[in-house]
Length: 317
Ligand code: FES
Image (cartoon, rainbow, N blue to C red; front, side):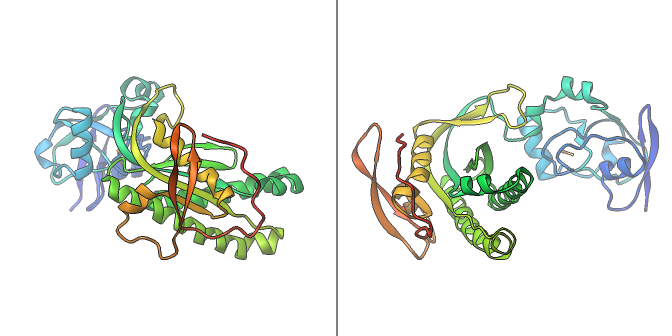
């Protein structure tokens, strides 16, 4: 049966069965902030419960996690996670406009992964589009950006599917991490599965879109390594403030670069390989040189040889 909830200073709103407070307020035309889309991850929908706390649903796991990090008082609830179960509930929105948002919660706070600085084992994932320059040089800017968006959407979907987080993009590549909320073994597995999925998706994209419409195909180079890194939010107002630093990051970048010299689209460190529960079927082994490491570094080749001739490697970490 529907109840009413009073938004103090705004209006009383009917809450249909199964609706969250956020859904009810949005349906009633209240411009309720919900930066994460109601997924319990940003806290911009938070409300102060003035009356009727006993008639609200139990804390969800998202609320418990956020309250653990943010130390909100008991009478602050996430509207996107809370259902009304009786009459007499009165709440006050805490974030009503951009200035409120700035005061209560800065942009960086909208991500539960925000940390001030921590050392942690993560899986580090670098990917780069191999032969993008010839495409740029022979196509209109509109086409270049459009295709870039499609390819990056393909990367992002795979990374998000396995709970990775993109840290940075640069030119025709990007850098992501796995393991912010899982064990390092699961993170290694997730990073490798992400890479394998991207290789499959690129093949489909080439066959169904690039070849027929542009007479062009792309290949990618992927490198994955695991290791202890420092991560945290630098807090300079960019939308993604998370930064990850440490020697393992350099190694992962170097593995990605080594895909060219080793003529294999997916190169992972031996340490990553040892963590995999279900190692990929096709595996080769090779060695690369790393700056600052005297002995040759063992790597596993789990991708495919390139169709286009690899360019000679010029960079070194
Ligand atoms: S909308 Fe993001 S936590 Fe509720």
